[in-house]
Amino acid sequence: MIAVANAGSSSLKFSLFDSTEDQALRRTISGAVQGLDNAPRFEARDAQGTVLARHAWPDGQAIGHDVALHHVMDTVRALVPGIRLRAIGHRVVHGGTEFSAPVRVTPDRLARLTALTPLAPLHQPDNLAPIRLAFEILPHVPQVACFDTGFHRGMPEVAQMFALPWELHESGVRRYGFHGLSYEYIASRLPELAPALARGRTVVMHLGNGASLCALQAGRSIASSMGFSALDGVPMGTRCGALDPGVPLYLMRQRGMNAEQVERMLYRESGLLGISGLSSDMRVLLASDSPRAALAVEHFVYRVVREIGAFAAALGGLDGVVFTGGIGEHAAPVRERVVQGLAWLGCELDAAANAVDGPLISTAASRCAAWVIPTDEELMIARHTREALGD
Image (cartoon, rainbow, N blue to C red):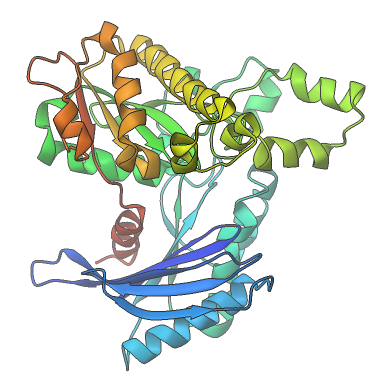
């Protein structure tokens, strides 16, 4: 059995996979501890979606990743008596310039990954916390780190550069790109669903609370909307997206904000929440009659369409787009507006297909295809983990 852990600032998601007779990986149990910092709650389901276990901590109580991991392990042991873990695969946001492929984690590698924390201060510590805990309580179980930056490490150097002094580029100040595990999964699905598109020029949109776009040329990343940090690109639930670098300087010099206050604003108080003043949840905004909620949605769509236009230029044309992530997979009104914004590229929406989430939501006459493909980062991590074991 292979376990997958995906730890965020306020959650710990997990999945268990075993191998079928044809060596395919099959998810058996998945679940999460959500709301670690305020109202922790746990749920586990089987592969058919049946709830196997639930637990809630008192409202207002905060728990750490250690408590969450122990609860997950105790529940798994109760649900699968005698379970033997072959390995644990982890999502790690940042691999820097050194780690471009999944690796087995050793104490030395963990220290080197910890040193990358300044590159992803709000993600890396949470990603690494379960690895440290597992070293303590499951010391004999191999652990594999899988990187969100890894899929983009093959981008052309010109696409990775900022126009800064060269020494900074060589020291690691460059465009990394994120959501790579999601994009890698979509790239693995395209040959089966749309073989011609898999060989062509595609823009994949991972749209959720965190959002980014990736330009694929024959399944390989050649450009990403996210850059040095997970703040860049399109606006997100609470993150600002692309921003004139003069704005933080202005905030610090003229508004007296310090680095911590600016960081909190850009990561936690901006994006859809900052514009709307209502919510970071696209579902709430689409259901609201607030003018600022409508403006937040309009701005989100505008930035996505504009980014696709830039990627079409980088690709030398566009054969298709793919929606994935929570918004991409479930928000039909957002998809409709994005596809309408791509009419100049020959993209034509099939409204009936879009209403039922596709998978193909463009018409037969559309020159640019539009697909909805659910992502599966956990399965991608399980695949990498098995490969890292040499199986």
